[in-house]
Length: 285
Ligand code: MG
Ligand code: MG
Ligand code: MG
Image 1 (cartoon, rainbow, N blue to C red):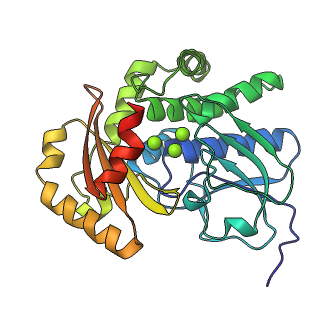
Image 2 (image 1 turned 60 degrees about the horizontal axis):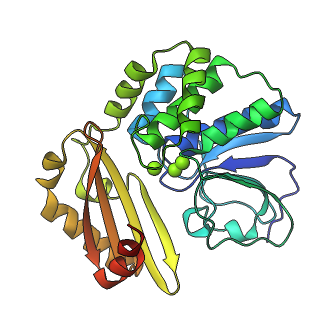
């Protein structure tokens, strides 16, 4: 067993990282550095096309890819808390800080920590508030990273998870970054909808999360598109990939959400134990 005595803190979002997971990690790195804390944003998987668009726009590199961490590694989690969505050996880490906007589940630490959760549309909205609370100036680069994460998570303010706070903060960030939020936002969302070169297996992995409920394991994946119809042309291939994934991962239920970013509606393909789906999701709508 190798113990990490290095003081550097690693910051990361969830597996199958979306724009918020990458952008918020990078912004949190800046926040730490401003406070004299040695920290590095890293990632737990390939970047998606939206994130590639953002990094390319800024002319910056993606954070370093990691697959596991050393025992005792100090970490900061952004945009997730559930261990099933984190680095493989997260239970061996020393979690210092969590900044998140999701439910809290399957999460436990041995020691006290700083935990900030708010029911907002995006982790970056919370980070924006942290900068404000600490009287830290926000530079153009961080403004663009944060507003991009908000656009991505809220589908340019159209998602049901978007709050007034997300929108107000995004508009203020657009002012700092000196961009037109609607033009940039649509370009960013469109960059994420080019699915032409993905196989069915890749499609179900672009933005995919594992959840545990009692003894049941379920997977929720989501893709953005300009045409749900186009995606459904490959429905049989997608269903085969989903079934294969469930068999390989001992997964009880797979929900694949296809979101139309132009008309902001979604359609789902649900496979597996649909009774579980009824119990977990129908009751909430
Ligand atoms: Mg996310
Ligand atoms: Mg998020
Ligand atoms: Mg997402």
